[in-house]
Amino acid sequence: MRRSASEGYALPAVLVFLAVLGLVASYFADRVQGAVANARTWQTIAEGTIDLANARADTLLLLNVNRFYSFGVATAGGVKVRFDDRPYRLPESTVTFSIQDHNGLISLNAFRSDMMGRFLGQSGVPVERYDRFIDVLRDYVDYDSLRRLNGAEASDYRTYGLPPPRDDLFTSIEELRGVLEWREWVEDPANADWRNWLTGARTTGFNPMTAPPKVLLALPGVTPETLPQILADRELRRLTELDVGATVELFEDLLVFFPAGTVRVTFASDKLPWLTRYNVMFTPLADDQPFRILDSAKEPVTAASTHAARAITPVTLLD
Image (cartoon, rainbow, N blue to C red; front, side):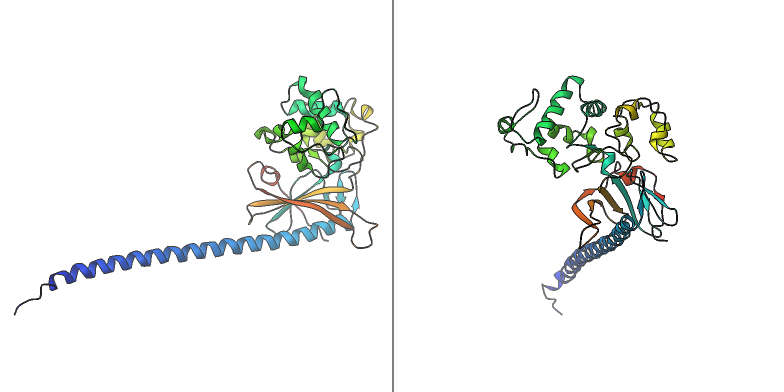
């Protein structure tokens, strides 16, 4: 019997077909696996967002139904929540939260030059540039167009192609990115945590009971050697009872041993790659609600983030 010339190509054709079929199947398998992974990621993000919303509700309730003290609040069951940005974890929750009293930070709107100078020194600013940083900041918030000796007004900002200074108080700490000298300072990786030290809130004084260590070191009489004992002692009693040299005497007109009317609340979830910060103002006399969320911002979670870098304290808010 005579064989067809095409019969010799049947097997290679089948093999090529099977190879192509395998490639197509592998492609679609990868696409399906990718889709499943994306679905799981979005499910995790959705769960984390829900957990965060529940934690936010519990925390805002904590702030509005409990008595305030110099350190923060205490529940009826005796649970203390300190407003010094230390992280807490709710029971059986993926969420951690921290609260920072704005009175415990250095106000960009009203500060003492000597305290700001010591803070700048800690941040690596040469002493000969202190006056420049301080005068530029004061020119930014004052209500006139008169330039201080080392300051900057609208014409100086135009030279750099920047909007003129507000000539009014800060409404957000992010405005610091547009202030001469300071705009480079905030971009320095060494000052990555600058939002944890400064505030644009309209505070009424300085509360050493809630100040971060870097801010405490800006007070006269506080040194790296005395700081650990101060931090340990303020867990037990008011700082006015501590031996911190000239601090209380020199700052008597500035110290207020009570939280401000605004706090920064930070939330982080084990299921989310970012943390969320809220600036909250208490409005107990308002007709509609006892607080207002002034603004919020998301930031990526890093190894240096407050909640990642510090020990987390478990806490039960609702007794």
